Image 1 (tube, rainbow, N blue to C red):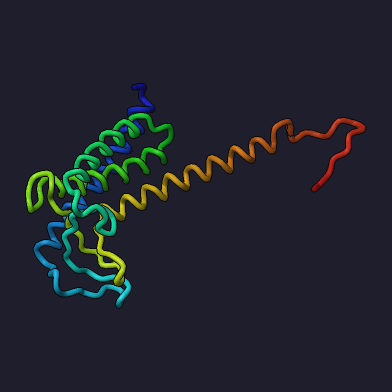
Image 2 (cartoon, rainbow, N blue to C red):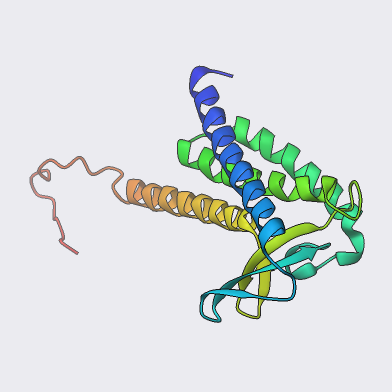
Length: 182
């Protein structure tokens, strides 16, 4: 790994570490201060705080397969570490780091939370209306996907602009050639 790759890997690891620390701290605060029965409104009915424990994935999908979800989560963490080591830009490293941190945050819950090792339920506390309840690891996962998506979009736009400008040097057109403004 060269110096630039090491720098990008460090960026990804830093982003992931910050996400894991914030995620685990907010989950601990939720466990000590929130109730499963009562919702504390933050933005009226749009956003509130309410404790929940999710044995499944997003929207509780796969709730009966918590052990399998744990294995998939551990596998995803390994793949994301490899992707972080191969990040080609700083923004790509940030996006991968956010996703990695979110994945690690939820895998920690699956490994060490009740009801037992490897089948733990993820602690959720951000209630989005009546849609679902999530946590900051989920927010980081979404933010990482947005960063990667924007990165791809910007690179695609640059590539299209570069392709459109191929052969254009910015100088005067050769004598006798027609130049169109459209």
